[in-house]
Image 1 (cartoon, rainbow, N blue to C red):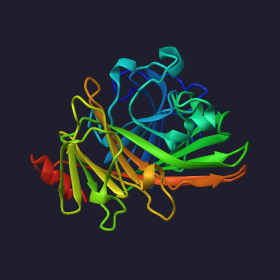
Image 2: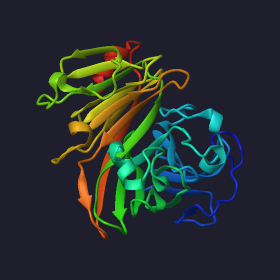
Image 3: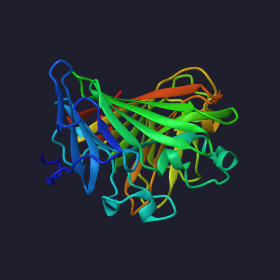
Length: 329
């Protein structure tokens, strides 16, 4: 079969299992409106494409990422992808962190990593730098990490498309399999192609002065607040990060608008109470991160926590990026 990038897909490697049809290249269900295929993607052969006719996503288990998400037929998609690392693996690139792009899930807060794993960077291995297994069933994809030896936790991500809407849902589970109880939060990170604007729908009862908090010293570019909507742009020279107790984020690209909704709820959230965060990368890596966090929860062996993030994308309807950012909510 031919893949989305015009290359021919190879037979699946051990890291991927299409449970419904072990010998076929495509799984299709007219009842669900969702199809699942084996594909090659920019040099990786062990990938899974999920489509519903409106949107599509590509999972690369070899690097533990949802590497692509966007409108059907939209070549570049919404997620930033580091083309310099196409087809490569973590351990073959560097002993340090490899920034592939796409959407991933880490444990939060980052400030606890040294205590939990004996180092502050790079991220815990099973969450970020080891191959995962992907299997497909019932119109969704499940990606499962190895057991992280430092945290005693296994990450399982369930990726599904709404059969009738341009929506992707990712439910991320942390399963505690051994070790002492751990206080932790589910942290999802989507790296987006450089947007014309990023926006946050601020909480009307925010715990933060000004309804947001600066997590790094630099102020975001083009920051302004209109009503309950905070707007900003990527800073070309400085690393920038802000957080808020807002439940919704949006990103305005050249031909799309994507909204990301976090799962709200009670509890103590990381970084002083942040439910969502935005990071903007300086040149030459032109991307921003839209991040969601769950409440800090102590889990013991045999327990698990999970968090669902919802991604909704639509075509742009106006050349005005501010108007598009405001209308996303």
